Length: 96
Image 1 (tube, rainbow, N blue to C red):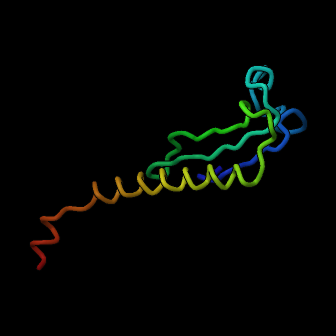
Image 2: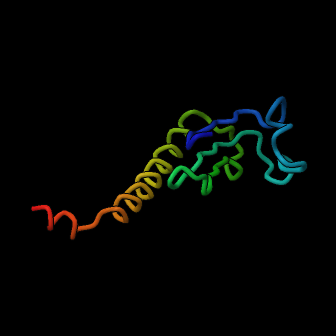
């Protein structure tokens, strides 16, 4: 997941069941989830996870879009941190 988003609409079956840790589905008590990866300078640094455990409903495309907006803002903030660290006002002023 290269900083992308995934909507897993049924984690109780198939490939998702095999990818998740043993007991995960029983612990979180959900059957769908949304995950968005977070990278900093090309390195994975974490992820955002969301499910609908409180409401008991299954996650949908709207939930994926909502998490995607949040993750996009976080990615932008990390990118700005990278650029501000590389920005050196002395270099800019000395070349003028």
